[in-house]
Image 1 (cartoon, rainbow, N blue to C red):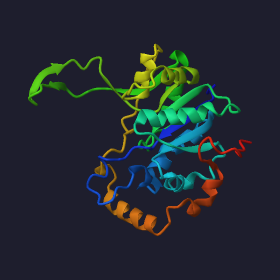
Image 2 (cartoon, rainbow, N blue to C red):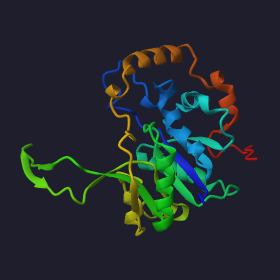
Image 3 (cartoon, helix red, strand yellow):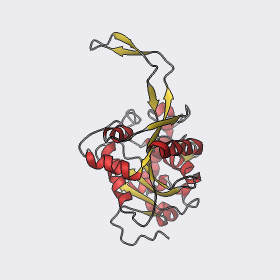
Length: 270
């Protein structure tokens, strides 16, 4: 049986590496791969998992409308509550804002929280379920892959200093999934600690985290070259944005299904 869970989808970053050669920055999550935005593709597989109860998407300040439009092709596939909340200065602050939104959903019961990169559009239902299953054993789980390439450590002079034993090393992916109360407690315990990922904070708080088998295809969009026509798409996106076609008014159906943060007193979760 799949336990009930909520999803935090992170998309509040600046996409600095992705947009460094663009005249005007466009977030990678808003561009398209195979006809769907990166953000939409990162969210879609979660809707196929029966246990999903709520979704919180983080976005940069002032980008709420663009985020709504990026998700518009999901408007009719689910009635699961979806909130968009402003991110912080760091990824940790953004996740913390999203977790605070989930704290307020007292009328929606769920046991686990999945945290996924909005720039990972190739995640699969199978990976989500296997990671969730692993989390039910220890309280926390992250998808991981063994390192197959040789690993070297560089010295301060930029030259190779030594070889590193890779037998106990892994690379990690998202979604990272944790017991609700434990991940909330981990964030409460270390408010000023900046972690590379959520599992680091979870383990620092004294909780146990295991791994599930990662997927080599579950790649994170990082550079413009990761999207073949990124430059052309970015130019078109900017043109449409300037024409007002990226405002939330262009996506009224999606707006009907979205609440914008915890200040909305008229939410109807039924």
